[in-house]
Length: 381
Ligand SMILES: [Fe+2]
Image 1 (cartoon, rainbow, N blue to C red):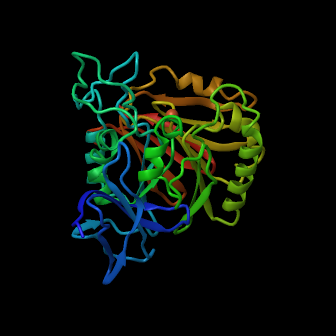
Image 2: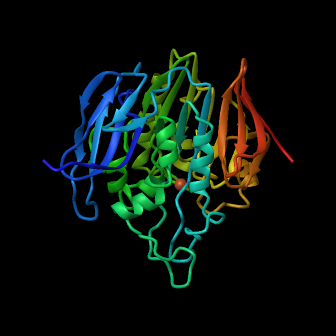
Image 3: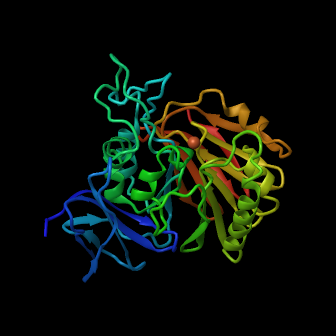
């Protein structure tokens, strides 16, 4: 049997609510995982195929494990009662027909710096709110992305997420959401292969919401990859109405619940149409998709915090858009927006959470209080 070389390994929450060790390996056989003194056989999640010459392995890990490893590589232990949670999103380096981000320039594409700064905090949990792979075209000549791989394949996934995320993987368990860049017509096959939390690796447009219980906090993860930003897709209506009802049921009984998704549900037609009162049991809604850090209170709904500032070229003028894009919903007060690269550090307080926007150097640039179904932010000069 060929000995596997571990290319990437991490701990992530599955749709079963359990922590799982995942590993991307070269070679045919999956390595063994270890949880405390117990050896666990990893199952082959995905074999090699066109564009993907690696093997992906997975095994559920007991929630109370203190020491976790894949082969000789130590992984972080599962979260218990998280006090510090980092949220980042929209992290890939954008190479499209019209735009080439400087993937080789750390100031133009700061995901590697963000990942190091996040790892240095040793958070109890890291949530990625989606959009990992933006390298969709060949890098144009004489651009600062020269040599970049592109397409939905192992090289591009390694370059845009798996390699830069290594410091996070070594330090914190993860919960990963799916973005629109991971829909089936884009990079869905790679998403299902490496990161999707469900057991099946077949690409589907929509997947059902699931809950992860971490101490007194319940996180309900909602797949909004194919929701329409503008307008309403009639085919989506019945699906999202059912899934919002599922999400609502999952939140019932939790002492504190977050609805975590990629697209802000208040600003896209499909979800706004389908949600009804499904978000009422939630204390907060966390999303990405708009490439900035944003926060807004919404009349009659839980507050929204957007962490879309993780590395993809920023959307500079969306702060006011947040208030305008909500259709029949209304912003309570002025939406807060800061178009600056970084990530959000959520720290538990007696009343709720503080949210600190950090830049890729780890410096605090804004701070918010997220408590009692309301969010209020101030810039830090
Ligand atoms: Fe997005």
